[in-house]
Image (tube, rainbow, N blue to C red; front, side):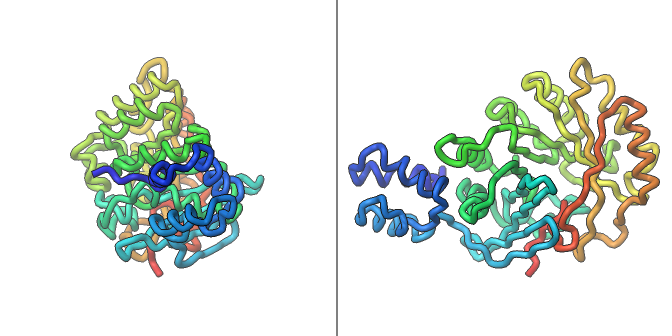
Length: 343
């Protein structure tokens, strides 16, 4: 059964109440331009209509409630309560130039059991609805924060949740959030049907593929999904994505000391990405420092700086574009792989 978003429900209420067309624009204007978060406070609307919105949708425009916020130097992490007595986390990063970027959850927990990720130890509780996904951003928006860029790299695997496509439709709707497609990034562990659907429906949205090992046997051990969608099959789908969209694809690679940071690994990553045809220059590797938590294995540690430098040097010498990501928020468990809903 398709769940309707609050925006569709509002249209339905307006039509049932025989309201003129412009009412929808007034409501969206109140939410997205005036940051009004309660239907009762939209005094431009007649009282009976506010009452009706209240009755059907509840008093708050936002369907999820902040429970707790942790803040460190450039990072704010918010724990939200969602229906069903569950919780999810979202992260806001503020860069020095004032740019605000958001890391949003698409599932409560995650069922894919990647060994180095805290979220995976929860298991999958459920998919978030399109409203629950977009309301994480609405919360920040209503609190006066600009939404400069967003990535679906919070809890869960975005392409495993069918509601992600409706969420992106809401985020890019000029009457609602009005976000440019290129300001959105989807991260995936390599779900082929989802990659192909993204290529067709949202070709300008940025795509990041989590690789973490170039060797099938090791990748399957770190990321069991590799048995279903082996790395070479995923790369063929990514080649197709690049050919059809002309857009870069980012390869995320978490460096684990003594596990996947050897010279042989660097050379194999370069080998995978070379010789992929006229578009191969559009692959870009992001090396990510590992972030430990109390629920990830003690044997996993950050690579030491000399190993990271050697890894970068090998990739560059083979003509691969590479960036070492700076990490924010590890002090409040808000960095990559650390979202665990801990109280």
